Image (cartoon, rainbow, N blue to C red; front, side, top):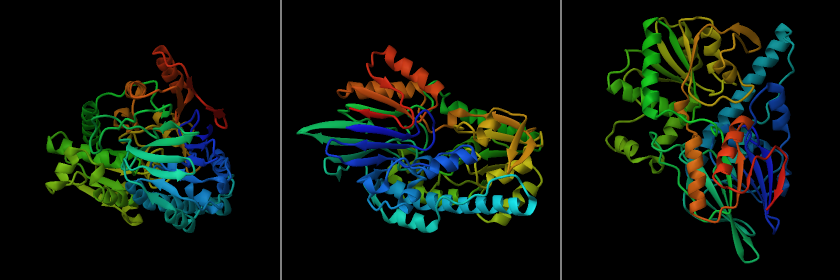
Amino acid sequence: MDLTFLGAAQTVTGSKHLVTTGDDTRLLLDCGLFQGHRNESIARNSTLGVDPASLDGVILSHAHIDHSGALPILVKRGYRGPIYATPATRDLCAAMLMDAAFLQAADARYVNHRIEREGVAMDKVEPLFDEHDVLRTLEQIMSIPYRHRHRVGRDATVTFLDAGHVLGSAITVLDIDEAGDTRRLVYTGDLGRKRIPILRDPELASGAHTLLIESTYGDRTHPPYEDMEEALAKVVTRVHARGGKIVIPSFALERAQELVFSLKQLRKKGRLPKIPVYVDSPLTVQITDVFKLHPECFDDETRALLQGHDSPFDFEGLRYVSSTEDSMALDDAPGPAIVISASGMCEGGRVLHHLRRTIEDERNCVLIVGFQAEHTLGRRIAERRPKVKIFGVERDLRAEVQVLEGFSAHADRTELVEYVEETRRRGPLRDVFLVHGEPAAQRVFKGELESRGFPSVRVPARGDEVRL
């Protein structure tokens, strides 16, 4: 069996890993968009690294764009085979991929308009795919429920386990026949955390020989979730007192729902001042509706709320914003407010317009609640650079910046190490590959595993091929 690492290798975006079996079955684990500098992103996303016609199947871990967003490009270039995903992931992709197509078209129009009308020194932009490519992609997605085994090639079967990261996220258990023997490869995708609201804890696979595990937070631990809610309350109270607005760049999938849930809980406890909360993202509205269709993914607490007709995604003072006109009006409205808007790394979407209008006012606050990849606007804001570019225009970053990593849906170092240890206890684990992480985090994580006696821990670079 050969593994080829085509993306999310020593970086956190563009997940794409190719498995080639001894019987020459070729399976792609994820097919995500790379996110970063515009020119680098276009170059990387234009080169898939694999011939679509050579693939027997694509296995999708979850619907986040850095894992699913290049699927329409794959289909556009001729892939006609099945794409395997959980039912919730399939439903989310209908919204996520269509939104990605819309945003690409909108961003291209905006940039090209500025080039033509204002003479801005930028390269013209062409969308990587359109709505028709998304529709063809959705037709090829085959839903497989958790814990149902399904054949995906001449000599391979797949079983999905709950990854606890986002709605429908899956750990891929790939069983490959080798001359009467079976080799089990486990790919975590993005691994969730234990004991956080809404979703169930990640499940464990038994009998793994090879483990591909994410390493986003391999060098740090998260504070308890309860501490993050208290920190959120303090930020809101402080900014409200000075009459400012809080802009929260948020992933439309999971993070926005978790923030709404936390704000609802803080309201119940009397920990928040009276302040309007806006979820300004048509995609988030659609995704929240998808959440309601999949109670099989929820933990007991969230399911009990729904059964008691107390939606975890609604409370007094919360408003979901869809129209462009209402979105534009938020920045002109007087007084304090919380605006939750996509995208999570500030690389597109409505949040850019809110940041453009708010970051030069010191009364306001930008609240970062998720991982920010290198070379993204979100990363530059999190690093509190004195000046940042938005829509090609350099602006002074005068607003307060707060980073609350405890809201992350990714497992931290302690949880990642525990997961690998428990996987070893449940089977003959021999090879561990660290993917979806930046080099600094991976060095720490690798050293921790090696100190615990793991004999083969590797950190592949993009393009590396390994024979097992």
